[in-house]
Length: 203
Image (cartoon, rainbow, N blue to C red):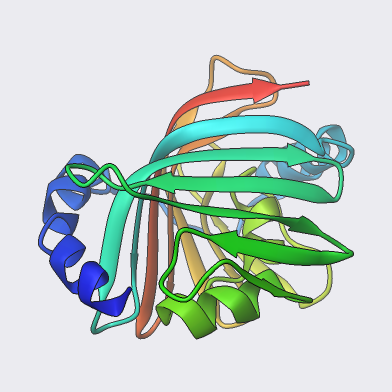
């Protein structure tokens, strides 16, 4: 699988070119209006645990990387995470929940284990905090570790720092209520996750 990732790394710049951040010029720790607005968003999304997003994803561990189309279905505590690689037509399929995880489409697979993160690290060398990412893709803070927020001039989060990760939000869909991110860029050197969300379906 790692040899496949090296091949796919050549495709990553194509995706990243589509995901170039539109940098928000204003980043501040938040005034009362920004903080109140974010608290209201988080309250509205507190029970948002049935949704589907589709888009593009690129992941790198500093040496190997891959990119493809993403379909992420969240159904309560259970998830269905599929990445389809361009050109090859191959895919990686991750499903699971509190009772464990199943990773298919990798060399030596399918693989089962108690932790989705551990399976992806073992099979692909990717260190992706899926539990936290579930909150971050909604533009809200994950439970547990303390988080620091900075805001753009749209009064929406521009940067979220939590558990050693820096999560940038260069683009939002403000036509939705509450607004949802269009681009989510998460970094914890040497790891990088780049996500461009083409569609949201909230249930």
